[in-house]
Image (cartoon, rainbow, N blue to C red; front, side, top):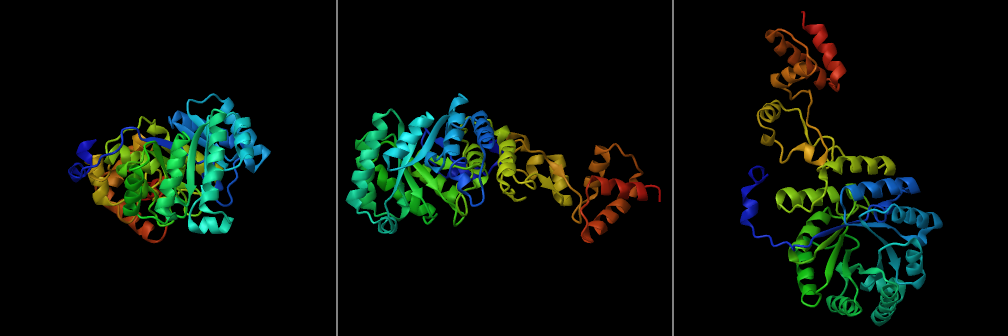
Length: 387
């Protein structure tokens, strides 16, 4: 693999933590995408695929939403997956009780901490600390794995953030969450924040990054390099507004570019991506990194020629690694090598001098706005091979 990525990657010293964990929140934050509502069977299907992918933790939902939500979470718990199942809870005892009723392994307790959030909810910093710590104690007393999330952490006063996280650490919380609730931090800002927090926080630090400025994955990687060790992701990057850190992009960036293999069955990535696309009805853009339909498609004659000689000429990794397939497509940019490849694919034999003529018709047909699918190509060949 190292021969096919930039040699300059290794020149930059990247010190990642050894215990990186992925917690997938497709079934919670992903489902909060406007217009998305997953039924019980759909949630279970996605959870099973996440488990097959070997995701360590699945955030299965937010129990207070409805009785159906509770049932969906219970179904996932009862499936006996290897992945740990966790939920989201407000700083309220009834939310913890709802999670306990579902039989989950743990929960993430969240509360707003920024000046904007406090003003909106009419709470003082001291009231937030008291309220949060009481609920953390309650959840821990009932045997739950507990994460504490400062909502809007990236816009929260640093001294207060350190104080509330330190209090949570004293209460034996299992991890603290940096929630970049509106995607308002830069990678440099995330690096600074994590390093500052690491001066006082010795437990796990989780990154929950939103993609409002297209920086969710950059912020996640920057945070990991600075000392955080857990990232929350969603399949296809779905979620509130612009979505979250895309699981497939983060996992493959770590695996290929940084040579950090987290042990996932990455060949299932395409399948789970398409399953989430089908259930959420949110189409995957053709140029979406890792899982887009165009990622391993080649039309340009120069590219096709290169890929046929050595796929790594124009691909950074093999499509099989993520369950994709390489496709050579025909269009105005095609060359004779693509025509020959298609002819071989269909077992069609024609005279060598006919290939330039067929290529010319393919280009003209494409330039007229027509897609050259396999049937159109066969029609062109049949029409012109004997002329």
